[in-house]
Length: 196
Image (cartoon, rainbow, N blue to C red):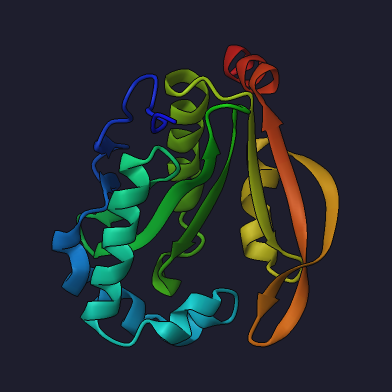
């Protein structure tokens, strides 16, 4: 079976104004990414179990190699978030991309000092454009743990539909947690763009 390929390859750099740039992940970022994760370790590990396994730049390098391979396989497109003043402040990506079924999930994290500044909402807008306009997706999902109110506020602000609770669908620090499931369909995206 032939490997999946993107119908139109997503861009590697997206400028969202003078204060926010998205740059496709690559292995040259290992030291910088590790430093950002390490500086925000206690903040991030509350909701992201992988943080406990990121213990050195080598771990970040391994992650970045995985992301490059998944991009080549057309199942993930991930970006680092950069601000002029603070450097690398987060990650956003489209994951579990199914070109056959026309759906994917968006995931993200941002440094504690950057919360509440609208960076993730703006970055999500860029992901929605890529998903629906470049990749021709039919459905985009965002999932977050039920207690993660800041993360849930993003899809709610962007007009996603809340579909319900996925019970015990993720494991966090040894305990199963429920996840909130949000979705947006292509027609909903088009209506939203038309009314903007």
